[in-house]
Amino acid sequence: MSIPTLQMKGISKRFPGVVALDDVDLEVYPGEIVALAGENGAGKSTLMNILGGIHQPDSGSLRIDGDETAIRSVSDAIERGIGFIHQELNVLDNLDVAENVFLGREPVWAGPLRLIDRKGIHSQADVLLKRLGSNLSGRTPVKGLSIAQQQTVEIAKALSLNARILIMDEPTSCLTLSETARLFEVAKELKAQGVSIIYITHRLGEIANLADRVVVLRDGRNAGTLAGDEITHDRIVKLMVGRDLNRFHDRVASSGEAGYLRVLNLRTKRYPEHSTSFDVRRGEILALAGLVGAGRSEVALAIFGVEPAVAGTVLLDGNPITILSPRDAIARGIYLVSEDRRKSGLVLEMPIRENITLPALPAYASAGLIDRAAERRVAQDICGKLNIRTPSIEVSAANLSGGNQQKVVLAKWLSLNPKVLIFDEPTRGIDVGAKAEIYRLMRRLAESGVAIIMISSDMEEVLGESDRVAVMHEGAITGILERNECSEEAIMRLAVGQGAT
Image (cartoon, rainbow, N blue to C red; front, side, top):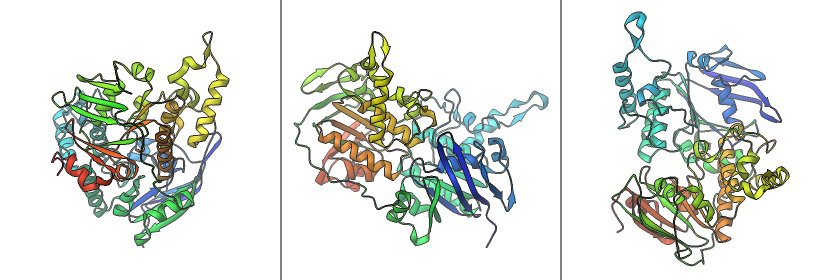
């Protein structure tokens, strides 16, 4: 057998109050795709941050091509041929696509003047983007790109490094089906060229389709390894959580009145010529499905007042309401769990406690002073209910894993009394165990009478959790499917604009 390209042996790492990794081993061979699975907080990101030079291990050894080495910085990792596609996007929106791809590594000309070869970086970026099946140009400004397009820029940046070891952390979390398929083709091409790939995803179906082996972490330790035909959804889940897990729970059909929330002829800035109309019952989960770019998030932002609608009417419980800002929506009990938790869902520098209580801060104030004890009681209670993994509610949100950050976003709204909750990609980047918790929570909220709109690109989630599905294409609803009409084929037909048959 060949020497492993990468061998991490006995890796341990502790943070204040947390043992993140405890004697973890990982090997990857040339031309092998190894999936790294585990619940949020299992240690996946910490292990990869050590490999990427962001953190230093407390103990353990790291070998590349059989030679023991130390990676003390990100530049060290890059020099050793390690590329990292991070889950959280790191693009600069004041630059264009090519400038992001080659940031800090721009080719120069004119000798000592060292002028950036702009023609060169744009042509090289175009080659990388074409390889990914993207129609973006290297000259396209990043400002205004969708989350999926920004993710494509991040992937192009990693490919530009010609890495021998490539870490992909949730690379498809906001890609379309065609973009995901193209990424898989690129991964397989890189594998054929001898590149070693570490693939992290919570979409377990992707692991079965792509990985040669699966290494599972649980609570900072190795939980097991699966290979070949052993790689199945149920076996991965059992290693991740230590038990069998029901993915979806039984639903009781909503008995609430139709039209509790009504959206009539809504036109957004992105699709001003197309109108959208739909209603949501009390106690119902209405999924908004469609391809990335169909205008679903824009509808959510308009209802919540982030980007006021160009035209249209919103009625709540039969009464027309005016929403010109998020403050208006919050005052009426309409809340949005946004797609980009780091940018618009959290104040990362604040502790968990303050993030949770921020939307209703006046409720914790008396004579202008904040009652910290009351804040702590509420935050502690809801952190327990949502199983937010943290040593303290005083930890800053920036230090949490992606899944736990998403739970804090949910917690801040659930500490209030929502009438309407809009979930935009509620489980993006969240592990299977946390997904099950969020699904149970959504169903409990619906059963208590909350009207829920769930925007999701995860077809399994749409089919498994919704009572009805409204499908969008280019800013308009192309059809609304009742529970017994829902299938992947029916949804995709509407999503590409073919209309109901």
